[in-house]
Image (tube, rainbow, N blue to C red; front, side, top):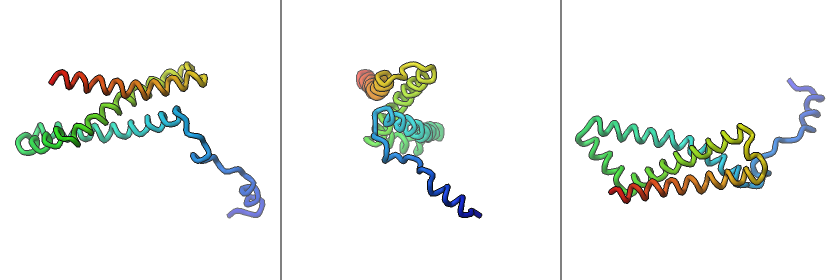
Length: 135
């Protein structure tokens, strides 16, 4: 049970800052995107496992999975997973550089955040250009 002194001390303590207090900046957005892509890759790998399971079972299961995978939704999911792979990879490189104390100044942090964003998009586009040229 709390007593009166504890209640007074608790009332004087400042509240922790909330996300609404912070101005959104690119490094914060890329950090959030890094976490989201990490979680999204679990979903992507589960979908890949279902696709491979359909191939292993054969017959009707594979035709159903192939029909979904080759349609608009399947292509969109593949696009999102490929982007998530590259974005998450580049985010990991960014964090590895920061762990070594590199690019910790404001300009360096911004440059790496921009590189993560642009690099993930460009690498994804390259994969789909190569895919289109190969087919």
